[in-house]
Image (cartoon, rainbow, N blue to C red; front, side, top):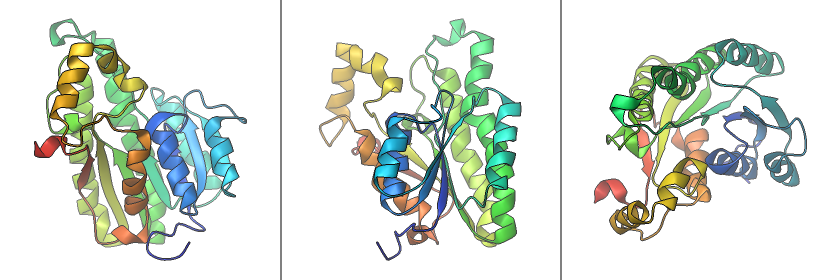
Length: 253
C-alpha cells in the first residue's frame, strides 16, 4: 500500500482493542500497514482475536492488559510502551458506560466512568503526547460519541465524559497541531456492540433509534475503519481539533 493512507512502518497504540470498535480499528490500521500495540483491561497476552487478525495481515501485535480505572497502571503502561519504541499513532478507544437515572446514579460509579472515559485517557495522551511533540509528529484519535452532542437518557456520567472528550480534543489541538501532532475524535453512531446491547434488547427503543437513522440500519464496528485510518494517516495532516461523526446520518436528521 502506498499513498496518503499508508501506515507502513508506523506503531499504533489502540486502547479498548479486545472487541467491538477497538478491534475493528486495530485491524483497519494493520490493514493500512501499522504494527499494533493492543490494550484492554482483560486482553490476553496471546491468542486473542485481535492478535490473530493483526498478525494474519503480516503486522506485529503487542498485548497489554491495562485497567483504565487505575491511574497508576495507565501511567506505568505509558512508560513501558514508549521505552519499547516511539508511538506514531494513539487511538484512545477504551471506555465504559453506566446506566442510571440521574437521581439514582451512584457517585462512585460516576467517578469510575469519568476516570475510564476521560481522566485517564488524558493521562495516557499527556504522556505519549510528550514523545510525539519531541519528534514533531504524531496522530491522536479519541473515540467520542453521539452523546458528545446530545444528552442521552440515563447516562449522565457517560455523556459528561464524552462531551469532555470533544473539548479536550480542541484544547490539545490548539496546543499541539502547530508542533506536528494532530488531535481529532470519531463520534460513532448507534453501533452494534456490547455497550449498546441494552438498547438493542429494548424492542421499542431499538425501533425508535432505527427509525431515525437515515441509512436505515444500526452501524457495524467495521463502519469506523475508514475514519480511523484517515485520522491516523498523513491524509489528515491538515485536519485537527475536529470530531467526525460516523452515524449513518443521525446528526443530520
